[in-house]
Length: 125
Length: 107
Picture 1 (spheres, rainbow over the protein chains, first blue to last red):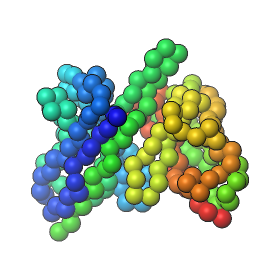
Picture 2 (cartoon, chains in turn cyan, brown; picture 1 turned 180 degrees about the horizontal axis):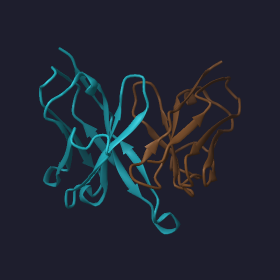
Picture 3 (cartoon, one colour; picture 1 turned 60 degrees about the vertical axis):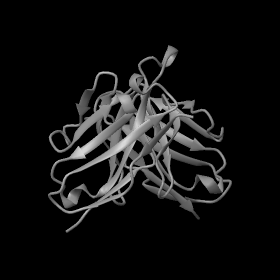
Picture 4 (spheres, rainbow over the protein chains, first blue to last red; picture 1 turned 30 degrees about the vertical axis):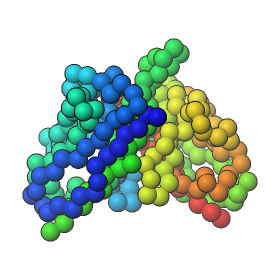
């Protein structure tokens, strides 16, 4: 079974650092992009960025560039999302998701499947 | 960035109803459109990819259509487990963007 399992909920203070994880299993971790998606309380889904664990090629949404760092350790099939200095506005649920690329007539298509269960990050003084 | 809009933002329906949700892109995205279902406290789940292809394991009462800028997700006969929020997402260009969601609740 293809699965992404994320690290547990975190409660942090403003200014603290944090690194959350997303471990893949059941597929070749180095062959698929892994994306991160933010969902603020009661809001919709925002794509933050993506990483290709095979060579650590990383792309960021302009909205999140410089605010977070995405990385991966292919030896343990794990992707990471980290902050150097958290703000209260970083309070949200964070999901990782595998970007699946179609083949044949869907060659240029891609979609997110599966998703991790989410990591709730709460930043409060 | 390509902007995605959805209508309605919410709807109330009964079990057995036919439900249609519309998604519109700010520019043509061909068929690069995916649909996800999210239940409260859960991660999104892929329903439809490439505008009209049903993801494996998803019930056949779900269907998608459209191309260019206008797309629809249809639930042919709403079931109790379908009450959720539905999001469209374009994969035509980076960054991929999501619609604001349509919440389907019980009438």
